[in-house]
Length: 218
Image (cartoon, rainbow, N blue to C red; front, side, top):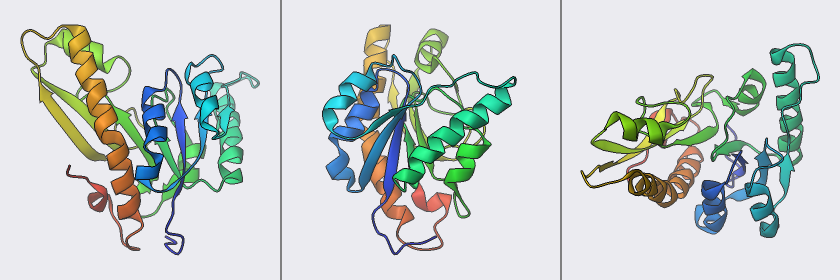
């Protein structure tokens, strides 16, 4: 790992409303590294219009069916993303509501021999419980008494990468779904940018960084 450059260049990935992406943008100076661009995979994602006011480039790269097989289309899609990332010399990815599983090409681009993949993801449950989509709804309907958020490194699975940080809260009996969801989003906005900052700084400390060195206590 080359630590001569003490500033990390990173890209944010989003698919929808992008509230966490916008929060990361608002906290970019506190994070203290270089936010190069936003990658979006849906041309109708609301985050696009919001982001245009930031002055930071946004690249809409849709998943197009141009080849016979899903695997070929996946590779084509990820190679388009990689071209953009290389343009900005991006070395880290930060997923903020990005609804696609990263494939071998994109994970290969971000691969690091010490920690695995230089990609962070924020998930609205206490993993390994409730991975995948609709985690807030599923956990609420299940009746959990303790819920929270997880920030983890990304691997080839669904929300299965090494856990970096978790924050929980107790669900009171009088919480309706909207209250429950709002607390989850509050935790996301409070902690994601802080963990991103700490992970980036920890990663640059030395050549022998391991996953355990990135784990954050806040």
